[in-house]
Length: 325
Image 1 (cartoon, rainbow, N blue to C red):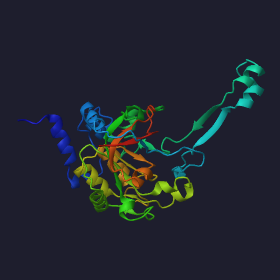
Image 2: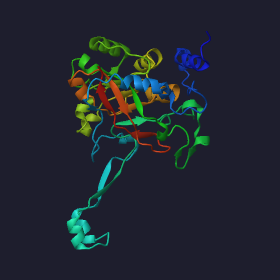
Image 3: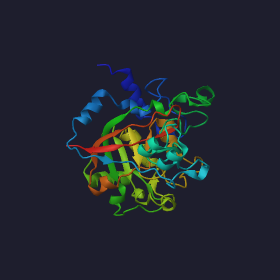
Image 4: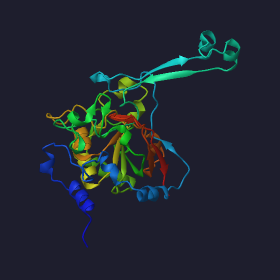
């Protein structure tokens, strides 16, 4: 029986040779010339229903961190930090009478309002496929000359990211090493991932959401420590996850998924460009995985949705994990 053309395209996508990858060229999507979501195309109504039907508990693990003034942020490139301010306070409303209803009404009905300003890559967030590119283009060959306007990207913006429901697997590399927090600048390799999975008794499946715990989230309240020489994944490990395990989505509890300084001299973010630009694989950063680790929950229904920030290169996300039967 002939295999569908779409199946063949996806198969070829995941079996591309190492030689071809070394050229670091943007990937052309096997899901067609208009594709903007990459490997998230592996989700379907059937795959979502399948994982939801396996939920065996009403317990929910929140995998996101708090947003607060002074929170960790990748500010070294000049991006703004998180700012919060009150626009209305109960007493201020009495004094200013902004609604024109008078002191008696404003003393009876208190009113608080506030506003925030932030970089889209702060806290628990997802990187859209336009976040990093190669040689003047982003995923699927889209170019800024044709697709980037003054109000954001016309392709692969954060608004295109669908709600994500899939099998989630947490790989606890910190626990494998017997450490609360992994060593500074440690680069997690494929063997680390394989050993941790073996210890946990869990196997990966095509279309999984894979979350990697370094323990770095324990330092999240202390921005100085959290930002200092944090551990992260290396290029070999993500290639194993993408090319051999065919993951849907990745995530970790550190600032920028990969470790710094960069492992290559010719690319300052080789893991980012490999995933986003070459393979169309999005990922989450600054996750909170401590409760999953503490209760040894390694397999779960992963459910998450991001804000639909039109044209943006990333968006805050609040993922949850619900244990399976």
